Length: 471
Ligand SMILES: Cc1cc2nc3c(=O)[nH]c(=O)nc-3n(C[C@H](O)[C@H](O)[C@H](O)COP(=O)(O)OP(=O)(O)OC[C@H]3O[C@@H](n4cnc5c(N)ncnc54)[C@H](O)[C@@H]3O)c2cc1C
Image (cartoon, rainbow, N blue to C red; front, side, top):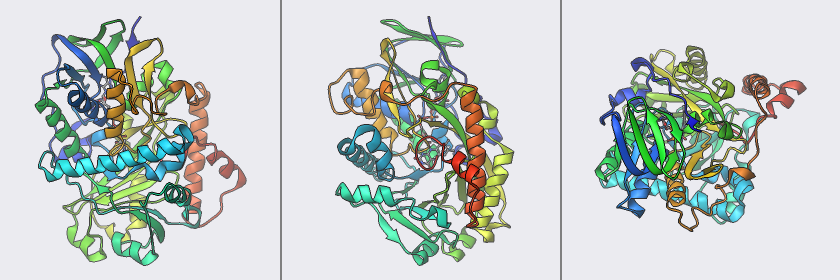
């Protein structure tokens, strides 16, 4: 028997994210040829795979760790995202529902520490990632969105953590240069990052710390056993332990697909317009989002571009997706319309880039870790649900502990254990249902943003969405 994986559709050069094009990201390591032997083989060179490799080398410096990456490190969600860095406290309610209040509080605090770790990397000159901790603004731009944060804020306060501060309409307008959002909160110790710089910096750090990386080496299948065999087109890796860190592409495995659905999120980046942004008062590196179900998320880059994303893309049938999840002109146009609604003064500014990426969603909107059924030496982590920059450093700790079979709080985490998690309906019901629900969410968003009330059917359908608010 073997586990067959899917090959990611490598994006055309012009469909790569602004971030990857900005740093002219390229593979720097050899693709796998012949046979390589390791203690641990990691499939996927995004944040999850790279953090896991780094944690493993910290805990067991003698361990031979190899990463097999289909394209180049950071070419998946890690190098395509919105660059919003914030802790898990915004999702305290959803995490508590899975792991209980006490552990959820601890995991949220771990993501705060992860932000501190990123800050240290930058301050010590280890990774230049344009990290700007100017805050994360969670806002409302219509009546229906007001107070979307209330539950998370109340639970955070009840847990004795001080993370959020309420913002007035004037403060929001002063900070964002837009009057579209008029209520909200800020998480001050949060902000933005250049995600491709972070991914490539982590790759370089991993190489410097002795991790062997093979880019342009898609794993075709894995033959399990005491020693697992991972086959690529021209080579083979053999290892006692395997970590599946292939994010949305893990939907290739039927046992994981039951708990994972994949949707596209779409991002655009404008040409540089620093003077205009200065004029409207948008000067700092805060990350901003609204509270629509198909959330808008945006930032001003240090050189004065606007990076503007929206989680309104397609859902993948059987979790299988191709080039339309690298770029979709139709959803790009949707983002441009929303950008101009929020920032009418940007109408004359050219849209220089548009791209998309896959989001790995679980029904509870909380990640899950475990090993494949009957194969304790093949572990996986997935389900970041569109929030991974400060969360994958924690995932790396959990996966490293599972690999090393350590008995600690990471391996004992309530996030470990797929058996306890809800399953999604089988195909084709899941796909057809998801299309109906997503269309209803789109209709509802479009009406509510104008403070109009959707009909009962639209409301009912849109509330069938699994998990919590935004993706
Ligand atoms: C458009 C978008 C916007 C987002 N915005 C934010 C944000 O603002 N803030 C935030 O915190 N999070 C955001 N996220 C989520 C965040 O980017 C992810 O949670 C995080 O990058 C997940 O990291 P990963 O390593 O698990 O996945 P990935 O970065 O996707 O890495 C998986 C890797 O596996 C590789 N792979 C797949 N199949 C194979 C195979 N068969 N063999 C070898 N390699 C394989 C892929 O090429 C890929 O590089 C966003 C995501 C997207 C898509």
